[in-house]
Length: 219
Image (cartoon, rainbow, N blue to C red; front, side, top):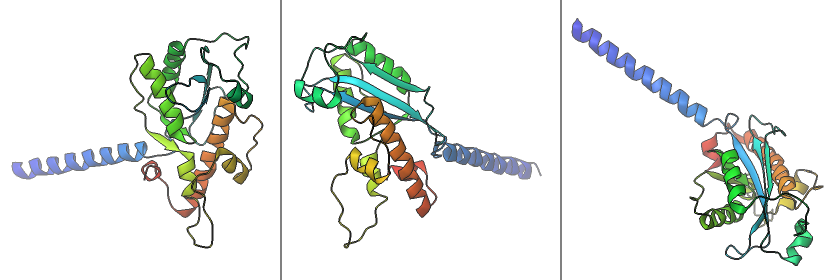
């Protein structure tokens, strides 16, 4: 009789433990419950070694909403200036604005980012630029998981030899496809916002096909 109760308790404990673990996994796999940080950087150019970040813009995306008050934007002191790229992003060296050092800006950004999943368009560029800046300032590289809207968008497209697919889709392509305003294009906050809206549109398209989990987005 004692052995029976001991076995019963052991079975119940295993079932309870499994149920709790399953619940935790479901919660961590829930896209809506996840805190995403959608970011964009404006830089002096595309050279990871010689160019520098001028501005980081980031917004939070959670529960299918973009809380405007929960955003981050920082313009960084400029030691490097490129007149050609300035025509694109419009950030001039003589801007009358209080700009923190690169180190201070990065520290502020890391606090805002926390352990959130990063979303960007062509993520590798932004992440590499930020990681190079972190290295220069003696800070560890980012370890956050990342998602790329350029890659995710391809998952929404039909696979057919009759339809021509591009190797690369720009943020302008996605804005045009999803009818997103490009009013603030080529500003860090503007591009982060376009990317966030595009991500929501992509998620909605993927959900039409099947129940979507966070894990599936990384496949």
